[in-house]
Image (tube, rainbow, N blue to C red):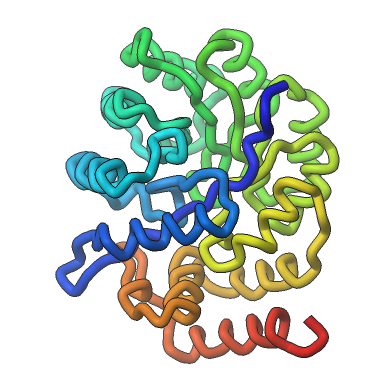
Length: 294
């Protein structure tokens, strides 16, 4: 097998006072993440508020990244939309610019849909993409989408589209499911989205992670994602983050550690966490990562 996927930072998206994406701050965060050892940056995933970022914004920010010298092979593009036509259009543009992978979530407006329905949706995306389709990582994050991807559906997609579907990001947070996925689909790039399961998942054959915590703990998460090293501090801090809406909490930590208050802003329907919440997170972080024992 070729080189493992490694660690991709699920890059947070900074917004200025007008609510527009600040490309300079975002690019600087990406460059720092790459310099800290991340293999790639994932734009507009869950942590990047991808469902709130329009097609024209995506194209403009991708162009800014490429102009800033970030190689397209270092970029994964999240696609989180419901219409197959829109998903294909967003994926086509990113792939045409040479990005490494597409992180493709299932449609999520309709709930309790069947595996057959989801298979047909993914198939429709790939048909519209045609010969442009490649390097797709399907995204299982049922806590957000409420649309789980089953082990059997993932296998069915792999069998039907072996040259297109190359992996899955599993953010289920369900270890028995993750373990089953790893045991059943050794032919796929399995990425672990829940850092509490990351190290042991890598030891069972996982190829890395797309991680929101890599925005502020890249070196620690890298050891988990690439070497399967346990880090109880990271796992404990995930538990602290999960006391709050995760994306605003991640952005609060980025703001704290960079001193850039721009990072606190989120797009509706999300709202920033309270100043009290920010302080509690900072105290928990300092206790775990800045104490003498750490």
